[in-house]
Image (cartoon, rainbow, N blue to C red; front, side, top):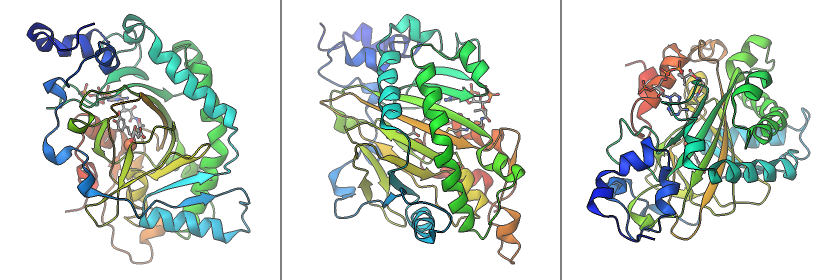
Length: 360
Ligand SMILES: CC(C)(COP(=O)(O)OP(=O)(O)OC[C@H]1O[C@@H](n2cnc3c(N)ncnc32)[C@H](O)[C@@H]1OP(=O)(O)O)[C@@H](O)C(=O)NCCC(=O)NCCSC(=O)/C=C/c1ccc(O)c(O)c1
Ligand SMILES: O=C(O)CCC(=O)C(=O)O
Ligand SMILES: [Fe+2]
């Protein structure tokens, strides 16, 4: 097995990783001793101990006794959304078996040959709703991110049966189905915090009219300190429901600071974060916070986020109930698909995406 790259191979990294569909998983499995230069991030993007704080953590909220008469859990959710933008939920009711099987399915998908996975690449896929890729936007990035992914946009069970890869389709659908009750409970609590006590069908569709599930694979990395698994970004979703494995490495920026806090893996827990769409709809009350993932020198890591979104054709802006009390709108109305395209067409750049919707 080669341990360093021949200059010829190095020149052809993009060909091997991106075009042939080997991904960074393929690179990792060559047994490289040093990180290819294409993945060396500028200093300011690396995750260093000097910016990490260890004596703080995002809230962990037990939602087992959750019902409408329990304002305490509702308050905790809204406080976390305002002050952290991130929290973990435990005793959420999604069976552990569902979580374990979608993790196993993620490994099953990525274990397949490059040829099989690459049938779902941007170039080869017969649909825009299924995409296998690597890094974030290789066409627009100066430096690569050490991650491969499969992204599945949910339209219907029938479409998924026809188009999603069989290695992970049923398990991804099962996770989506089981997350539905939790998503509705969280949105109900978050709307209460905005004095919206009734979620009618129009509002439900605006908050959770479309879903995307990603399977992320972060292979073991030589020189993990020089690169990132995922660079600084905030999600463009309403809410993200994130399942991580037991490896760790996800960091979230502490509000109004330059410090980063680790999100420790907790067996059976799910990480929840507010996305840009809800920051915009709440006129900035709920925070869509920057986060990033450290690469790992010893272990492969996987994660499975469900992005809960408006529908592509929805107009999003501060909700009428939020601005009706004379509050000044800080965001304008934007077409959600324009917002998402703006996000996908550039490299990760922290919180810059939301400027697209700001009133200047
Ligand atoms: C996403 C779109 C806009 C795609 O619509 P479509 O008609 O297919 O547009 P398109 O013109 O083909 O695609 C627009 C661009 O996005 C890129 N793109 C589309 N899907 C993806 C994807 N899953 N991953 C990366 N890029 C994508 C395309 O490659 C296009 O770029 P370019 O080729 O013009 O350079 C549509 O489905 C939509 O509006 N969806 C709304 C719901 C939604 O998907 N919301 C996003 C939630 S995802 C979210 O919040 C976070 C995601 C994330 C974070 C960190 C990562 O590292 C990461 O990989 C992903
Ligand atoms: O892998 C993780 O823990 C986070 C991934 C992430 O932020 C994303 O896919 O948007
Ligand atoms: Fe994210």
